[in-house]
Image (cartoon, rainbow, N blue to C red; front, side, top):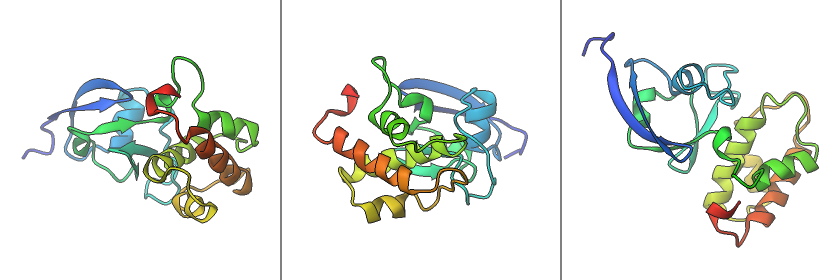
Length: 166
């Protein structure tokens, strides 16, 4: 394959079907942020260490800086822009605000999505599970106690509710 030859992909992004033509070496981060304008997907380190670029792919948190855009083909992809519902903020977003788990906000989208992937897979996780799930997301401003408290609170709020009702 010619490295300049584009690949046609299609996937579901934040609840809607998307089609794109991507270069073989293009990252999911570049496609989502630069080409599709989803500014919540942030580049921090570019090597999968900080978590600023975290997205949810098929219900699993992944570093979009380490994933090729072509790998999104046929997947269900969620960015922080897809968390908010027509009726308002997602319970995770509300809890982050209420627990002062946000300061500069650079890490927040990645934290929210890592927490979301954990909650949809585990329900109401333990504090230790939350700490483990967020270990790949670095925060230089808030410290982690408020973030873990916010995730615990949001998980309790989400328990028993249908996914589409947040």
